[in-house]
Image 1 (spheres, rainbow, N blue to C red):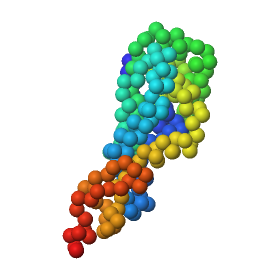
Image 2: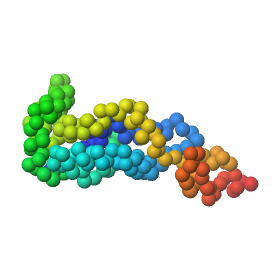
Image 3: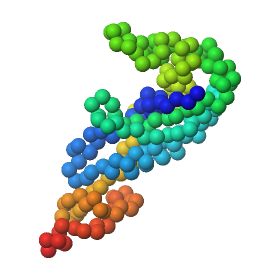
Image 4: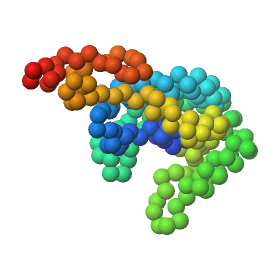
Length: 199
């Protein structure tokens, strides 16, 4: 069995949404693909080993970290999704049958139940969730890794890895053909500048 999970659900308090981040930056524009690559790599560097070890203790293995961006931002946002595969079914059954683990899964199932007539996307009880290896089960498995991560810590990893195009000091325009290199001030070599063209 192999499932893919929304990272905003299973890696809380991390939220990987990028929509609207550059709305108020008039002197810069976000380089989305480069930002997503940098955030993914930083997250894996920070937590990848512990996630792999934790999953292995349940007979599971991470197979892919992939940044997802919706076609439209009406009802969804970006997420760093994780694909997990069952590599040791016997160990998975044994580990998830522990009473304290089942209680954690049940609490998550209860918290996600719908009481307003809408159909909840998660299982009704721990047994169903574990059998499907759905989001509540994965949250219960991974939550201990992130229990001490504050919202500020989570925001820092996201914001510190955003990649920007900055406005040219000479013509105050954002050049899409700037060649950036790493530094605190994100200096850039401009191939073509309006100030030169109009000189």
